[in-house]
Length: 170
Image (cartoon, helix red, strand yellow):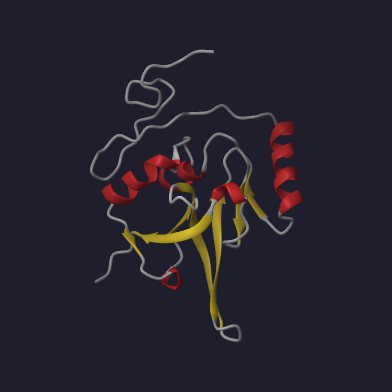
């Protein structure tokens, strides 16, 4: 096994130049693609737990943070999410019901650490149930990208806890 000094850093050949609006470097890693059989196995595992998931894309080369903040190019540790939120001028919504399409969904552990992120891609008002329903697009680690309801994630991804937006108001 090879150990890289400053893995994911600016001089790591397995990382890409990735930064925030304020030009902070974001640690990242380019990962190799898995075989089709292995990718199919990950899809089958996820669908066995959540059969209603809609598949968008199947790849193992990036994770949820890489999908949301790095244009699906690399793997980025969830510990880097706060750097993006701060440096890229995101604002935390005070109410989950205020989420709009394009906003970022943050899943946290009970202890408060960010475990998973996704993007709101659908918002519906259910008048009969007096609630707002969402669909989220997210990448599940080495598993596929899925379109899913907020509660349809593995327990290890935590619970939908926050919504952040980069919307600019006039």
